[in-house]
Structures are given as structure tokens and as C-alpha cells.
Image (cartoon, rainbow, N blue to C red; front, side, top):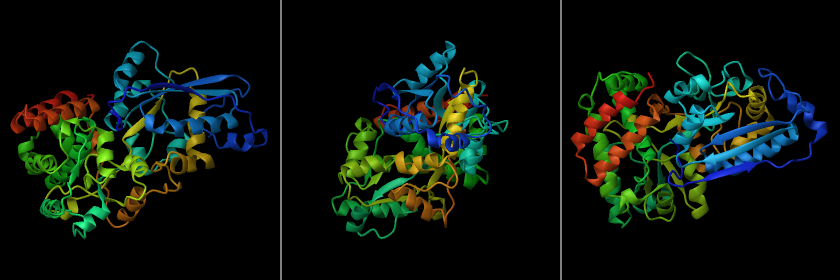
Length: 436
């Protein structure tokens, strides 16, 4: 369900220490906490339990927990992070009646999956602060805002500008033919074209969604409708050559011209392969990897580009949006205090700068600066002249995406044929793709 280090079993309970309050600033900060939630008794001890699956943001989360302690000294926030088996543990806690005060899910279809446990945030200041695209990703089928974006996101092929230059590639390829030409030029210089992380099931959905968007464009419908048609069993891969042919051709190409043993390369290995110059292009990833890449190679020149999905250059698009959501337990004993906390984060001056300055992510809210990173800056420039692709992974549930990833692993591992995999993907879409 979540993006980074899925194989890592990590469970941490991180409790913010007791910090002295800056009393002179409390009134102003309290006003920033928002109008929609009832404010709690400032003298009454309050404990908020957060359960998330984003270990990459542990330090950033702890930073805003410590800052909020200055605003509300009576509020203690317990942060528990578990990545391996997170979904299973979350569902077991909900079933046992022990739903955390704050928990994390994917956005899109899973907004409705967990709707009955989620507080309605539609009229809160935090909802008004979200960008339109992000708010749509947090909204249920009946129009309620039920999630909080962890971050805005960017899904793209990531390439090494210096290796492209060495190979004589002057422009990022936008068509499959241009991609084949770029591969030939890279290999002529002894450069491996692709770094993959095909051991991870979740990278597959990030690749696939670019082809889903192109298939929808070819069919003259939007991606949400196309996915709904697959879930309803009303269309098949055979109806969409971009899926039936181009997607598998792209996957075959990345394996044939990629790093060795693709089913043994996880997310961290892929980052290492790319950052160390062992490969020129990263597949299945996005903006969240930039800092990890730069830690290995601070001088690397990163570029971003859409996936070449067809012979139509305009179908090569970067994808933006929010695919992860925090949820506030509507039955929590501290629901008002929890909403008050997130209203503060999404509307205060500290919060507006936290996304880019501390977490170093693309802000999901309006009027917030971009982080000082290459990929978000390039995204901003690209989107001035080109549209963003649809975040179509949000239209299927992660139960489907995980099965999809496992089937694609079987395909490149040689244990299932293309035809068998397509048939099983279509069946999985019907069985697992919707919460209806």
C-alpha cells in the first residue's frame, strides 16, 4: 500500500517529550488552529495516538509534534510507525474496536473503504486549505472530505541528466520509438538504461497508471470511467492496445535493458543503482526518492519525464496528486483535539512551511512554498505548459494493486504467460478493484 521500504519491518513508538510552552505566542497560535473543531480544555491532559506507515517521515512528524507542544502543552502525540504488515494490523485493530485516533490509508477508492471510521472534515479550515486536485483525492463518493493528505506527490520516470548527455540524448524521449533510440545510445556508451525495483509490488501500479491514462485518452473517456469499466467487467485489455501491447513491451524493455536480477532489487537497491550511476533511468518511482538519491550522490543532476507509452508524444505525462491519506477516527475520545491539531498544521505559518522546509515534500495545500529540490521545481515548470496526468491508481483499491504487482512479478519471473497474467488481472479488477 505504501511506497518506501516495504520489505522493512519497522515498528517504532515515538512519544514527544514534554517541552516548556512559549506562553506569549499561545493565543496567536491557537487562533490558527481553526474554527471547525471544538477546542478542548487547555489544562486537561490529552493524548492523541497516531498509527502510520511512513517511516521516511519519522523525523518530520516528530518535528511538528514538538512544535505543537509549544502551542498546546497539554497535548501529547504518540506516533507509532509500522510498515511491514501495516494493513493487516490496522484492520485487526479496527475489528477489535481499537481504532487509532489517527491512521493512514491510501487515497482514492480507499477513502470510501474506511469512510465509516473517518471524521467528516468537509467544513474544516484544513479542507479549505487543500489544493483542488488534492482535495478531490481526499473526497468520498458522496462528496465528504474524509482524509488529510500526507503530501502532494509526483510520479514520473527519473533520469540522470549527465548520463543522457554522455550518450548524446538531447531531449527526454516521449514516444516508444524515441525511447528505443535513447536505449541504443546509452548502451553504445556502456550505460545500463534502467534501474528497477520489481521486488516491490507497489512500483507496478506507478508504472501501469501511465498506460491506463493513455488507454482512457484513446477510448475518449476519463481514467476513472475506464477503471470503473474494468471493475464492472465491461471492457478487456484486448480493447486497449496501449495496455495489451505497449505496457508489456515497456516492461519487457526495462527488464531486458535493466539491472540484473530485477525480482531481487527492492526500492533501496534501485535508489542505490541509480544514484551511483549504474543505470540512467528509474522506473516506478517519484519525488519521494530525491533526498535518498542526493544522500548517496549530492552532485547528481536529476531530470524527470513522463513515460513513453505510445507513438503519441502528448501522452507522455508526469502525474501529480495525493495518493496517501491520514484519517481521523470519528469515534475517538479526542476527535475534537485531533482535528484542532491538523487545522493548526494545515493553516498556521509553521505548517505551511513544514511541508517544504521540514518534510521536504510537495505541499498539498495552497499558498505554501515548494521544497528546494530538483524534481518539484521541474514539475512546476512542466505543468506551466503541459497538463498533469490523472492519478489513476486512486480509482482502484490497494487489494487489487497488490495482486496486480504479484502477477507482474510472476510474468517477468517466467512462471505465468502474458495471456494468463492479463486474464488474472482482469479477474482481480472485478473481485478486488472496488469496495462496492
